[in-house]
Length: 202
Image (cartoon, rainbow, N blue to C red; front, side, top):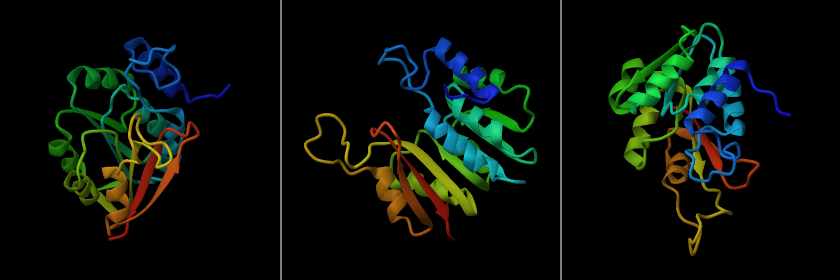
């Protein structure tokens, strides 16, 4: 059985009670709200571990699972700022992370709050951005050498259900068309989801 860091275990338990456990941990309830997949969480933990004296940002705290993965591995001299627009979810995450002084949970519009703590060495965008201009604004928040991560991208070989042909994805188009980023796509083991990582070059 896969072992998770204690904070992630706690976040998972709270998420299940709130009906937002990661896909595959929802007891077959397809209507339950999905949260950070373990494979995504482990990658975030790997990236966060390298942010010495750095700052990590997260857009879309949700149940706090992604936050828990990053907080569990990031160095002691690192700070994590996570923003959630939903007041109840932000309060839930605040309770979950109350014992970690390196983590700040903010409730409000990420477009207003994220720039106040920039620049970031790692920025996980888990919601709220749907067009090229909004993704470009995220690159503005990165240090040169900083990394932007997003998930919930359908792999090219697995288009959305009932799609007559592989659909263009605005996230993929941005990551691979933005001259300030060098990017790659990672298809997750379930073969139904990808995540994108881009490092700011300039």
